[in-house]
View (cartoon, rainbow, N blue to C red):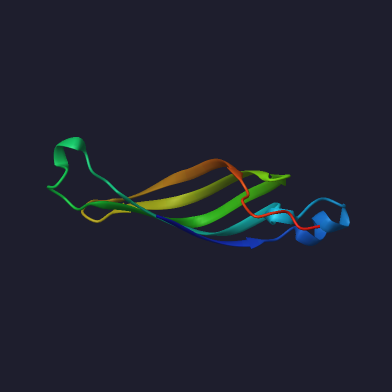
Length: 104
C-alpha cells in the first residue's frame, strides 16, 4: 500500500513557457507512506512483520498523449514492527497509461 500526497509547484512556469500540464505534467514535492509485508518463505504464517517507509518526496511527471512517465526520489526512514529503524533513499520510475479521455 502506498499513500502519497503531492503539491505541484511549477505549473505557472510551465504554462508561461507553453508546456503541457494535462494529466498532471509537472514537478512536485510531497510525503510518501509505504507499507508492505516482510515475510521470508520460511516464515510465512509465523510472523506478522511489516515494513513501513515514511519520507519527503520530490518527483516529476510528464504526460505524452495518454501515456505518462513518473520519476520520484524520497530520502526515507524504513522501520519494521519488530526490528530497527534505518535510513535509505527510495527511488522509483513508473510508466503508465491514462484511462480517462483527454479533454480539449
